[in-house]
Amino acid sequence: MRMPIALITLLVLAGCGGGGGGSSPAPPASSPSNPSMAQRTAAATATAQGNAYCTAVQPFYWEIGNASQALASGSVNAPSDGNTPVYTASSVMSIASASKWIYAAYVVQKQGGQLSASDVSFLHFTSGYISFGTCLPGQTVDACANYLNNGVLSPNAVGYFSYGGGHMEQHADRIGLGPLDNAALASEIMSQLGSDVPLAYSQPQLAGGVVTTPAAYAVFLRKMLGGPLQMGTMLGEDAVCTNPATCPSALNTPIPQSESWTYSLGHWVESDPTVGDGAFSSAGAFGFYPWIDASKTWYGILARRDSGGNNDGYASAQCGRLIRKAWISGVAP
Image (cartoon, rainbow, N blue to C red; front, side, top):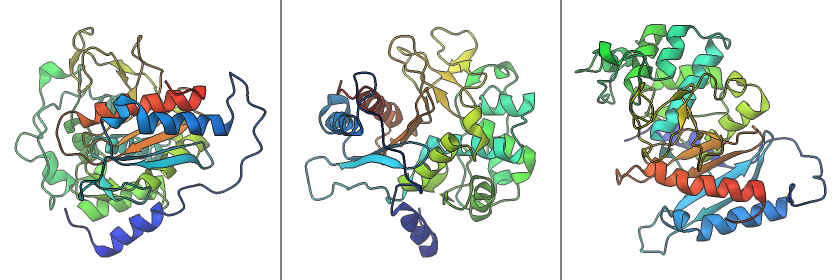
């Protein structure tokens, strides 16, 4: 996938200085229920570098912050073999299904937080458009929405959760984005998220085509925590069950059926009764895993690009949720 040099430069520049503006007040004294920043950072760093679930997905970049700024981060690398990438806040990468959160936030912002029942069905993946395959890089949204079987409705799937890109592609076509190609689509999405969230599309696929940097995505997460993006007040709204093994209204999910997460507006709620902590997230197939914790206090990113095809998003989530746990508790799990 090739991008114009100017766009690559924009994305890389956005990755510099990953912290946000403003300063934070001095934190209160630490306690077992309120670890110090030093304790949080040490626990998260130790987990990222040494926990087995995290060594399994190295190399990666991780970052944790609040509504104002990044607070801790690190580039964790596998043993050097001469070809191992070093990921940083400014690494430009395809984020696959982490694109879904971006599109949903765009829709919420564009419509002033007032979603119709139809909007919700598309963003909850219950619209019945489950035949989606792929887009071609040079297509428009409309051309992709009608490519091969992408536009085929499965009536028996209406009202049932089925994870896939067809729901968002059809929704985008219906709300007027059909004529847009990659460049125009990126410009339209940024018109609502802000120019401080620079992104591109490798193909006009709303659910999986975004190319950006961890630093840019971190700004997006901070804007949900800080208020400018209305999605922040709608996290987890009307979440639906997703595990076909336990839920009769679910058809398929990329999450192993040993766990039961729910799905809200373009993002997961990690609500499994055994290992879940209620965090909101949107893991991508290549391993890009962004999250906001259940209290809506912290955001985090685990960023990498792996095309192994072995559900790398879930593998990143297994590591990322432990980094989150370490940060919140101040103790490495």
